[in-house]
Image (tube, rainbow, N blue to C red):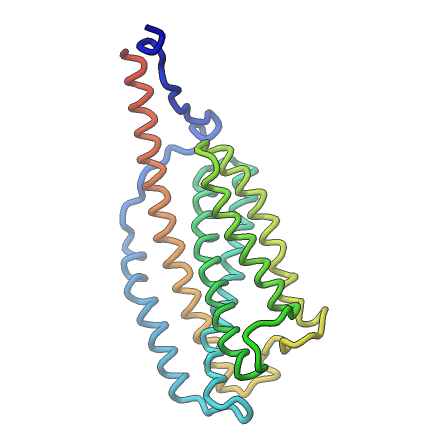
Length: 254
């Protein structure tokens, strides 16, 4: 008899989130459709042109052209984590769930670009330095950044409460993003194996143009990936909220 009257707890929507976020799945935007075509084509064209046209480096030969992927991937990761930082602060101030979902989307994409940066750096380092990995300041701080955002994404799966999940994520997202300046300045603060940042003053103008063009192309890819992940996150939250509302309605009618 006791079991027949027992009622399962129904997840209650957070009052703070419900007040700020009448979430609806965003309609497909024309700019996103255009970007879905433009960004990959631009990136492939930029890679093909500058990899095929730039002269091999005096010391590293054609291997140096991996720079056109490695460096833009690192820049894109930095931009993604800056967006995580900005949206995490926005969430803590406004409790707007859209900010939390944007931060989560940027963290996912930033983690992918950071992983790509580490992998390409290792491939570049093996023939250049003679090793796949070393506990160099730049490599170590980048690995720490990667692990922090993998932890950020894992943390989001530890609770079903959207408000608690967003608050925890925002704090970790801010702390993780604060590591970005350390990664960037590590080659200046600790002169270890990794070379200093490349700049227009240290590169041949053609290499600089290729690097900047590919960085812009990767930035478009970054926006594209974050936008698509954001749409997916919003759709998932709308579905969760509908399920919660239906469960609450069933409980009221029984």
